[in-house]
Image (cartoon, rainbow over all chains, first blue to last red; front, side, top):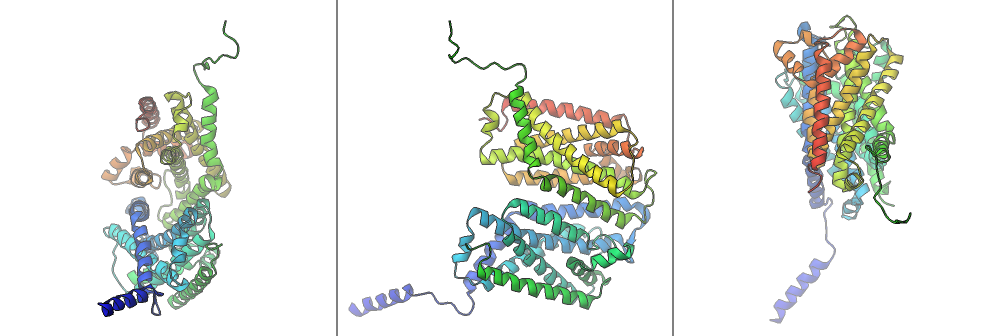
Length: 276
Length: 267
């Protein structure tokens, strides 16, 4: 009997030792991803159905207000011009508000420690947040695309551009949401971020109108809006129409994604506003 | 002979003004304390809608009801904003109190059902009017418009804010969770305000959508308010104010009864 007992003891001792991970803590990463995604979908009334309905209403109003006028923008029927913007906005808004509100919620409830004490390095936490934001953005974009389907021609003109601008644009807004969530300490600040940053930057990004209708100063100003490039790129992917220089837009978005990702990684690592 | 120190019930007149006034002040301070969120942010939204809709449609729709599209849009947008904020004030006050459990602070004091109705509704009305007034003043600096009929402007503003404050009380009484309130806001209030004719003249709509607009109570408040500014109405000038007045009266009575019965408030 003795050898068997010894074997068990050795096994028990071994399992008490430090848990070993490979280069990436895949279980932790997948768990955090699943948790964030589940939280995003739980809030489906305010996060998924509500925004899709608002997008449907905006489309309907534009159609009804234009009447029989055959309003056009940038050479496309107005509905076809607006639909890609609404789809990108649906994804970006979800990614931004989700990441931002959960960080604030965790901070205020004092449960941020749950994520911080887990054996997850900053890079894995950033990746899990980013992946959850992009997945939720994809779900919201699909919902908006589905309700807009009867009103606009939604084809796929350039699959590569579509994929790139969607992923990069949503990622950029997820990162901005994380940054806002780390910064904000009260719900008022969250409301301010939505009302004074996300909504104005999104609505004034040539989502509803072609930049042709703008005065030169407006055109100059809008060129500083990163969301403008994401929406224009997605519109190119769906309809083949682009107003901006796509290479420039793609590079700008890539640069901001890299910069923001790097910044958030550092902030997570040094524990800015999350570790005291 | 009872001594001056012996306890006796406190006597209130026919109105407990000592209780009603603090209730009203509490409802007003709830929003004035966070004015950037409750007054400035609706103003930014109104400005954004004005800009994007004039840029998207201004060229194809040069004139509506005798004025430019932006001037046509302005009263409807202000009214939408007033309505949404009047609703938000009363509904969030009740739901938050219920979820946090401090609704007893409303039920314990010697306030009658009528006084509760009045205090809460006046709070919502004040927020609606504050939002409307601020938006109108700022917009007047940015674009030209004039008032055609003050009576219609003021009556529609008060009657509509009051109506939405009442609807907010109803929703707040009914909802037990934030999710339910989110559903009412997203699936009832938002669609009704977007499809109210704020963005288009119902005269030019296809038959079906014109009917949709004309059975929507939100249409009457926007139409009357807009008539006060531009002097052109899509609907009847007699029917609009009557619908609003009747709706206010009925909703007020209904809520008074609900408070008296303790609907979803008392076991």
